[in-house]
Length: 104
View 1: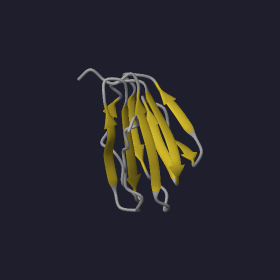
View 2 (view 1 turned 60 degrees about the vertical axis):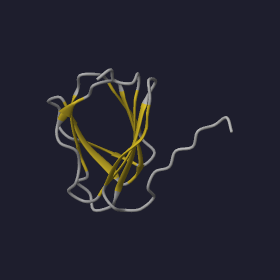
View 3 (view 1 turned 120 degrees about the vertical axis):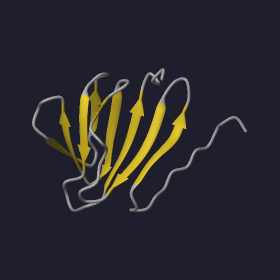
View 4 (view 1 turned 90 degrees about the vertical axis):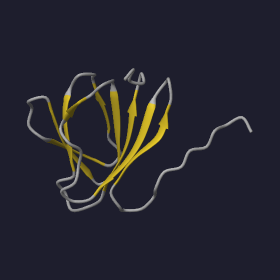
């Protein structure tokens, strides 16, 4: 078999899953319910964040929180302060790709 297969959850429970971490990319799957999210942090690579379902509420650096719905892809540069939350009532599901893969 040439291909490698990776799986991630398909439910509504909170999840931050490291689906694929290699020398090229970091590929994460995240699920957040109302009021959940990530601790505020700085991006350690270029971040490509795809909203699969729900509404992403995100504050970047010092700007106000912006909201993005399903079918949206965000490109966030390295060293950007990120505040990722689900402020809506629907379950938020994200795919996050870091490229190039962070060195640390």
